[in-house]
Amino acid sequence: MSQPAQASTRPNVRVVLFGLMIAMMLAMLDNMIVSTALPRIVGEFGGVDHFTWVVTAYVLGTTVSTPIWGKLGDLYGRKTVFLTSVVIFLIGSALCGMSGSGVFGGVDSGMIELIAFRAVQGLGAGGLMVGVMAIIGDLVPPRERGRYQGMIAGIMAIAMVAGPLVGGFITDNLSWRWAFYVNLPLGGLALLVLATTMHLPKYRTEHKIDWLGAALLSVGITAIVLVTTWGGNEYDWTSPQIFGLSALAAVALVIFGFVERRAAEPILPLRLFANRNFALISVIGFLLGFAMFGAMNFLPLYQQTVQGASATNSGLLLLPLMFGMLVVSLVVGRAITKTGRYRIFPIVGGVVMTAGMFLLSRLDVDTSKAASSLYMVVLGAGMGFLMQTSMLIAQNSVEQKDLGAASGGATFFRSIGGSFGISLFGAIFANRLADSSAGGAFSGGGGEGRGMDLEKLKELPPQLREVVLGGLADAISHVFLWAVVFTVAVPVLAWFIKEVPLRSTNDAPSAAASPDEQAEAALGKAPVA
Image 1 (tube, rainbow, N blue to C red):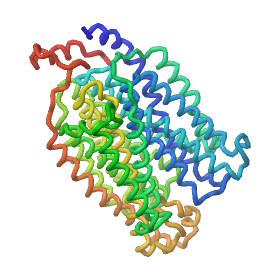
Image 2: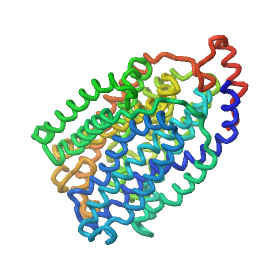
Image 3: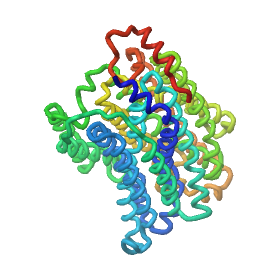
Image 4: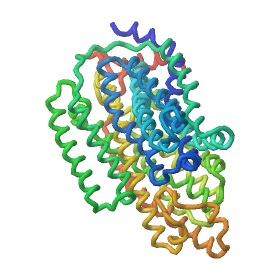
């Protein structure tokens, strides 16, 4: 008797989707905007030795909180939990904007304040990302979910490119503080829309939080993120600090596994991994985050150094990547809704993404902007096949009561993969650059190019400048070549995914209904987007 309740929610799906898209845009856009504002922040506060923590604190808060937000949504209802995460994100944004203004202390403490408030903002952002996916899972049956998740993937693609553009404009024309304040009106609009229009079905679950499991998972994740952030940068990989953190992560996660087996309501139910599709998608998500977030950080560096683009123009040069991802995400989403089939898409996506990474490994000082744009279209297309299809498969693999945990788990593994990728590829880049003839041209030579002075590069004699640019191009292309090693495993793993028919409702399928009858019902009731 759940059909009337479901039908009543469908007319407002598009209105709710508008609010969800704003929330997702906030979570994705914020990190991109802040990366552009970082030089100005360091110029005002100093603390260049700690400025990477402005990014790391946000990533850490997001990664630690993602599976917890997902489980809280399963227990207490997704609407209340999601709106709470939006409020926390907005409070963190306001506090970040006020850092070092004298409200909390002197300017000398500005960098420390900003790092702490970025962690608060990250805690809220973790709820935004997992909440959006889980809410779509509540509102829309799996058979129809592809098109809506394709739209969300499009928003993510737009945010990846719009972030540097908006951040550059705000930093140049207003103040770096507005990189945070801009979230307030947008977040307020999302809160208003969602609070008044979002009506989710109720799923009764025993309210018992696994606090011990949450604490152990948080400790383990924090230690892992610190290892990947500090290893090879702050501390040598063989240092006692890195060994100690690695041991702490291992012990915490092993104990976490024992606790979850006995918990009444585990934060991350280990029984989900007994499902082959969920286990495969978790590994694919890790590899996707590893290659995508790790390698993509180097595209703007290549554009600003080797191709000589400005910070704003480097954002424009990423448009082909967004175009490939946006178009393919929308087409794949509608294809899944129409046919009910999805297994082929992660296989094709893995192949296309690997091809894109291989093409980018061919970048050198003579590569034209047209050629690099074509390479980015291929990479974006591969990501478009994978991004939301992986979430759809994860959600379709579990019961409705575990939807939040499954969504949180899929997002969590992608985030952890990104953290590992950023660290490993940064080390690969730094080592390759140090071994080249360009290695001594800049001090620092960090994995993100933070020791590089672009003005100094322009002042070099032409012959030396060519040597330096050649070394940079070689180090960056080497990163993409290493990314191929990881992306090539994606289509292999995707081959073993079992095509489980997508449910036409959010309830368990009726035993009395044949697959053909369920498909006809789904097609007949499919809403018009």
